[in-house]
Image (cartoon, rainbow, N blue to C red; front, side, top):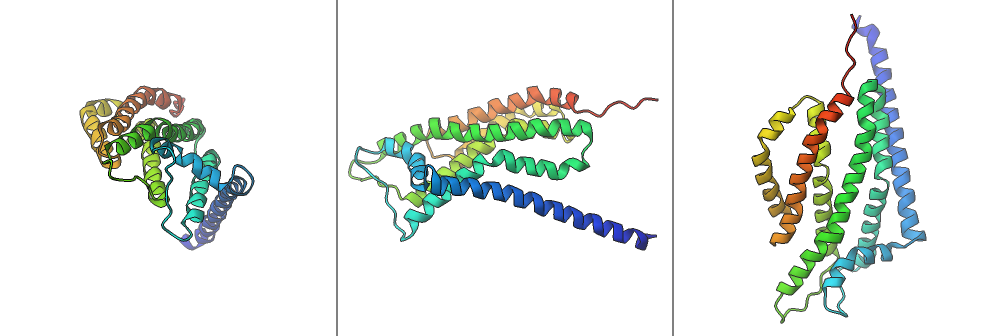
Length: 254
């Protein structure tokens, strides 16, 4: 009996692998196209990096510039920045491909949850990155440059700057996903809203600990991360019951 089912199971497994490969190719193709447009057509890799560097340039004394210590760094770093921007722009499409792969195995009431989560996840991540770029960087870089002794000429290396900005943007982007995480945990039945409310004090302490680890050692940048994390946690607690009700399985009729 097991031998009779083996070919069918193998065919199903292979078909899933083919489907996964197709979704990965489609997602990668769009990311690549967006990257090529940004890199070679408009606005260009140099302009993309100049935009990323603008918060630091605004904080530096007039006439200051960043430095590149590597031979190919002036080419590689702008290319990496452009690739990250292409991935961010393509994020809704990438998440849609992930949803399309798992959708056939979902019930209708479960599918009603996925589409809002894809849209909200993309929007919240981009919102977190934008919040970091437009509000946090200005405060952080101004503080660092004002704190620096007058005998020091601040000239950041572009590769170190990219690593720092990438870490900060990922931290804020992932922080803004907290409502989605809360909703998913409640919807999957792993934890209840009441339980999440009861651990609120620990979440607040954890938010400030995380902020202290991933942000520079100044109070403002830590508050900029910890306070949104706490607020977004509360938003997740408010929205979780509505999502749970909207996506619950229909009651069986006798």
